[in-house]
Length: 148
Image (cartoon, rainbow, N blue to C red):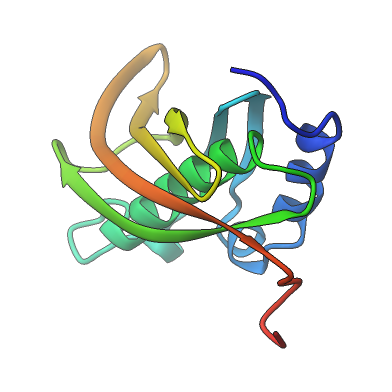
């Protein structure tokens, strides 16, 4: 995959760092490459559901961000990214010491970018697939924040 903007990775990291939701959940950037982003998160009981597993909403939020930022790395310098739609499948309970969320671009277009992602629970050396996402991202221009 080719970058349209040579500053895309640095810009992606800066935008990620401005997200209060990611900071509140303890989600960090693990790896970035053109069209691919890996996010990481330690288990935090504050974000668990009633059985003690990480809440599906948290898993979904992290996968959405991984896919959105993967798409963002391939967008033009004047573009921002917004999610158009997604579908998640939960394969196993989100039980682990930490979690990894991988987002990857399937096809990048000028306006719409199609992505796929996976969530993994990690305990020690064991990694288990717990969820998948298929998401469509939209490139928007002339928007710098919620005030627009």
